[in-house]
Image (cartoon, rainbow, N blue to C red; front, side, top):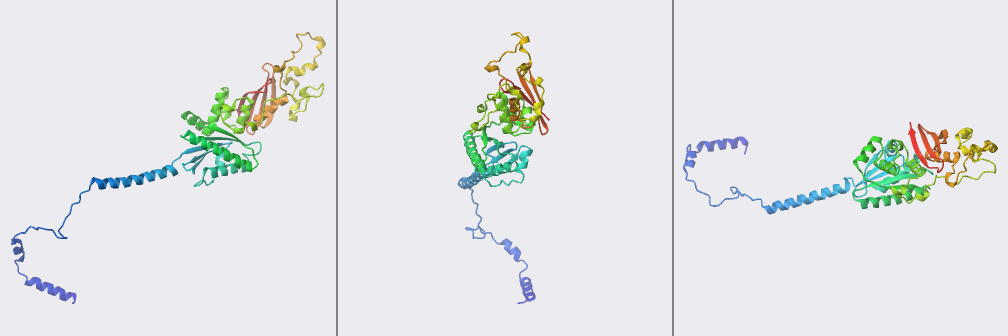
Length: 379
């Protein structure tokens, strides 16, 4: 049937309907429904406490799983510090995966530049850092000192990580035919250490090592030490006879080459020790006035002197080290060029000035023991 026909039919039906049909419907008595059908039924459901607890339990389990995942994967757990001259901080999660890599100085930034650490283990990243340090000649033969520090709130875990990393570093570098000297340090992060580390622009690990050296010898000053590499700090400690084993652990103490002088080399009969050729030819022209007084006594006619005028023969404890030995000790701290060398007759001390790059070292050495008494560094 067409649409127009349908509309016409509906209109005719409406026209035939009684006019008062609506009024009649209103006048009909109202009958209360005894039972609702599917259309008129309206149910009110009560939300029980039992259902609420079920939903809350599901939500709690979900949050617990989410927080546990974040705790294991994204939240820092340990901080590992590798110091040579580059200072690098490795941040790991509880799964020993690296989640951040921080360079604490310019050399550290050179090493960590474009290093992809995401998703890698602590050992993998450590190996790559060591390889880069070797490529940049920070770790080479005779310069294999490395300070390793680990911080974790759980001291037992920190100690385990420190020992396992120590073994890994030795294995990796020995494969490269290097004999590392790894210094292990317990790390206690304090606000004071962090403040000084930030002030001097060095790592918390290196600042802790310097703080401990100053405890061993209060004459040392932070500004004198912050520019030294780990190897230079160790050699300085040896020269000053500081007891490193009181502040660090290491299985490599036996590899440290002693710089405290032993017996002076024997000379030919009648040849004073200071007439021996020097390791540095430029130092052979130093005037005799800079040498200890007993080295010049041969030029004095002894027949004209009384017993009181004769130089006192020193006993074993008073024997002085020669200039060559003093230079050797000074150069063990800073392998540069000696620019000045003096002997203080009153205090029996050698004063050595060394230029190394843009730095000038002034080192004072006890002429009787060979002990380094003081070191100053100027730009």
